[in-house]
Picture 1: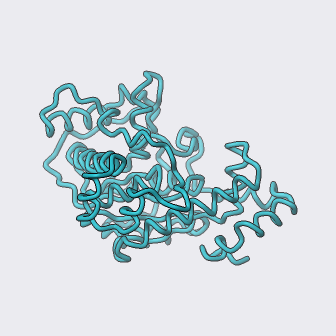
Picture 2: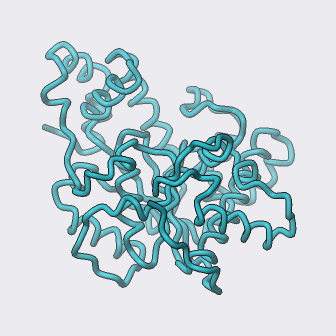
Picture 3: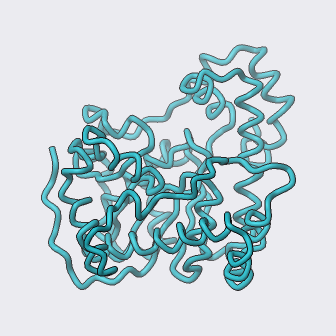
Amino acid sequence: MSTVVAAPSAQQLEKFVCIASIGHSGSTLVGMLLDQYPECTSMGEITNLHKFTAQPDMLCGCGTPVLKCPFWLDVEAELRRKTGDLSLKLGEFSRPTELKRTAFRKLPALSELLMIWGSPTAWRLGSMISPRARREREFGERAVQVYEAIAAVRGTPITVNSAGATTQMKSIYLADPTRFRAIHVIRDGRGWTCSQMRREKSSMEVAVKLFVRRHWNTELMMRSIPASQRMLVRYEDLCRDTPGTMLTISRFLDIDTQLTDFTLKKTEFHGVGGNPMRFRYDESTVQLDEKWRRDLTSADLALFEKIGGETNRRLGYTD
């Protein structure tokens, strides 16, 4: 099921794209669609590479074990060439900070305050005194090196990654603000909480509080990124009008290619992590998931409105 990977070229990375979302919002779908443009290579979630290279049976999106996938083997070889480290392991090289918090406290830590501020100079100086900031800075710098290796291997000027957490997205931005672009993917909170409840076995109260907190985190992190380098995409718009939404995204990224066929070519996608739909190879069309209209009870909806209604309306969901 794997595909032939192009030999390394002289292609230089022109820009890299972080798909920022709070999960269950369509980031995997956006990445798969962008991967179909000849200018782009989408890698899924770089933060999961260390997990997918730790076990021999973990699969790349193409269906091949990551440790045997020609694409990821070529990326690892290119990183070894660029760094001069012949013992380099891709998963360890791209490992994120070991601190696993994805939604920070009401009183952010120093590293998070520096990220919210968004000054590369302050970030560099702060990393000298904050161990967490130093680890986050190292992760961001190494992520950019992975992007550059992918550009060389695939011959594509744009690489795309789904950020595992908003702090990781901001670490990557601060490592290279000029080439950074963000696509902020959002979804109706009722659909998001329904998905969270189904997949994580959460209660509505837990799910909606997490929805509010994670969006608060994301909005704070986005504020210091220039408006010209970020865009908002609604999952529902993407599914209802895939060609129109992708045209808007391609213009934002200055992509010349105009696609008309958005049949999902999943066996050609080398992303790691993300929605399990990437392995459902018999599903090749974009479909809107609105199970929440059927599955949420009136009590669920009332509790969602009480806790998350204001956030949902701020995101543009007013019905």
